[in-house]
Image 1 (spheres, helix red, strand yellow):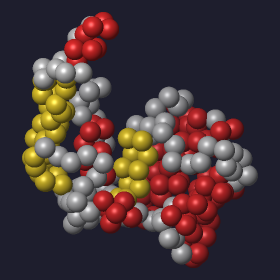
Image 2 (cartoon, helix red, strand yellow; image 1 turned 90 degrees about the horizontal axis):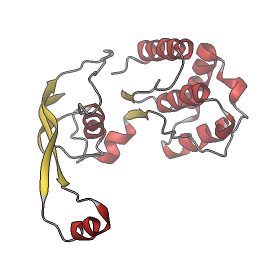
Image 3 (cartoon, helix red, strand yellow; image 1 turned 45 degrees about the horizontal axis):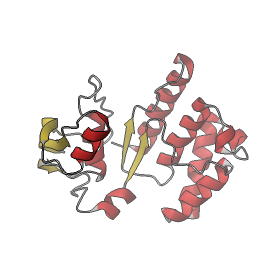
Image 4 (cartoon, helix red, strand yellow; image 1 turned 180 degrees about the vertical axis):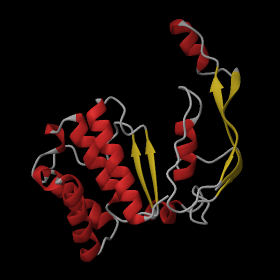
Length: 205
């Protein structure tokens, strides 16, 4: 739930050149940029909602407020009954997030080792962990990538693994910020089908 959500950033009016950069260190010449302006919505269990707009429209800023990374300037957010920036630990335990091409997996490690580390971080019990791996294999046969280091994967494979990692701890809400950016049409279609199927089976937001 989000009610009349607003986020304004205080931005320095920067000057050009080296002299300008030095002056900027002591400058009080700021402007205020409204990134999010009066957003309100209510999303129910099992819904998949697309949040669209041009570059700079405030989509990522909104998601960062919903995940607790940013505090709203005004308005109210409730995720599973919690205010994200005030209850960051609780909120983090109950959400999954994928931000574009920023991986949450360990670059030099094989995929299965990243999954094991996430299992430890989120304190996932053995049954939940094994059942989720079984489900992932059923949907996309991820076991063929278990021993492959993340750095050796294609962008499409890495994105697929990042999305599965976000679902690993059975979160109640999943946030996906441009998860298919830079991918070709075929892998985009595969990933969207995967997201829909995981959401349906887990009854996620």
